Length: 154
Image (cartoon, rainbow, N blue to C red; front, side, top):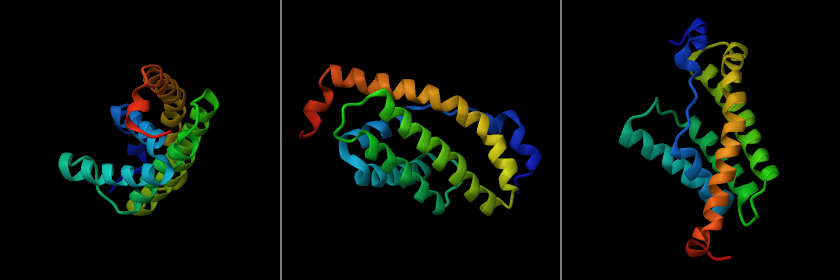
């Protein structure tokens, strides 16, 4: 069982930044909210089954869907701007990752929700600006090279 004291150790406050973030933002940008959510769910299931990353819980598929849905909602068929990327990441990171994931973890592992929330807050607040910058410049670079024009209908 996860102990409250373990929530503040360096391993639980690590910042995860992978190609996954950029690919999910691009999927939302290309395919929209429904497909973005569904593909993020499929990606989570495949990531767990192929790479065995983390503990698989069906409840987290809802948060995976919401993350992809929000990416698609704010980025699909729109010219990407700072406001759209900021709104996307604030909603995904604060509402989905921080609040919903913390709540699910507290239920599944029997930990104190407030302690878990505070322990994860620092990581989320550091990740938001980093992810906004990475997503904005990555999508803008692909737009500049007309990558999206080749793979979708506009």
